[in-house]
Image 1: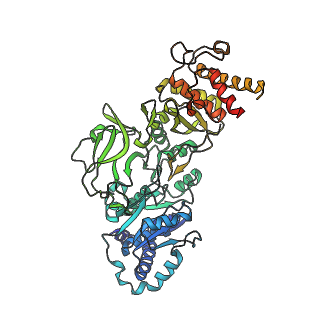
Image 2: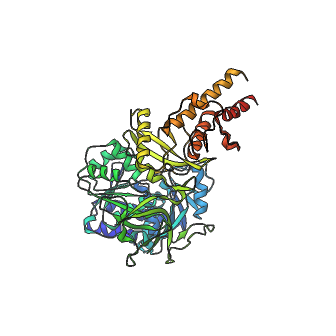
Image 3: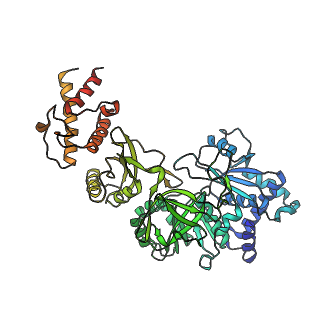
Length: 464
Length: 90
């Protein structure tokens, strides 16, 4: 079903671009040929489960589609993980081999060079009549981001992943740029969007703001999707409006109003859409009204495909279709999302009038002298202080109060630290309770991110 | 340990304590506190448990440890300074 989307698109216009990988343009017809060659190789070799350890590229997209076509389950390893992690990826996804660009000496399991697969497939293509068969049950494994722990493999049916994408006239022929990694659920969703709407995808050489701006302009990109953390970086370094963009999507983290306003200015002709999706639940809902949070009317609506409710301050979702389960046997937590029960999201929310706002993650709650405070509320105040580029708030264990709030701050270029520190203290005293006010400010050169989301695994060490 | 080292520790502790008062906008000078004025609680100089928690964090940042984490709930500048003096001597 998945590669049929590509073959249908290729049948209608084989010369139309499908992938633009560092300047090399792959037409639909060329990509389809590559997919068929690789599928022939996979079928001929009799593979069942593989890990892909390739950089984001046209080759990786072709391999994914070939695996879907030939019924091979493929698990996407994060190419930024060191090769020493490959054993973990291979064992948790029960894979018999890892597809690599060049063999990695830090991994002792079986490795297959991508180029060998390609040349092998070219030799067998003629005899592989079975390549055109449809594999409705083909599965893929995507790993959770791991911003708060070790990544977990999540198994999906391709059909469900692409089934979450609605075919829409206004999306037809859209051109996206890849700002997530493919091994991240959101990156995968971009691929699903392109397949579902006859679109095309620009894969940038890297994620530098300058490179991305240049690629967006050169290739007339119409759709972009990234995390609030990425957009904050982007809007901080790039002020000239990009009028050709029609849709801007934010997801993976809660957004703040100041950021939505900045995006509105940078992309004057775009719909700015905040998507709520998780690796486990898939895409649940989106909001396009330019305000942070979501309308309370989405709550307690039994007719919604993904029903929402708030229990003890935490958002719960009853999903329509999501993952099949975690890979590996040791994961007890909701092993099947086909079970029509409510799933706690770990997101702390608060309803204020007719709007519901995200306040943070249950795992991020900081207990200050018995009062529970959340980093997001505090970050939202600090990030609006002039001179602050980026902030992460966390709890620091304290013998008297249990925890104190501390803030790691990245300054704008040439912003004077003492002035910014004074302004932060004033803003905190004005807008935050005594329990919420950050008690230690650490000025740091940068904040660690995982898949372009702020890492919240542990606070960084103070530098001053 | 020399007298000047002990004085230097006490001076640095006093500076940190005065900064807490300044942040709380409570007017105090070193002369108001001395070694033996209780910093918090009834009859104290006006700090509460949050202030003491912040003080403990600043002490840890400055000296690498703090008396509160070691189970000593120091009440005065003298007690805090003595904690570090004892550490320096051992």
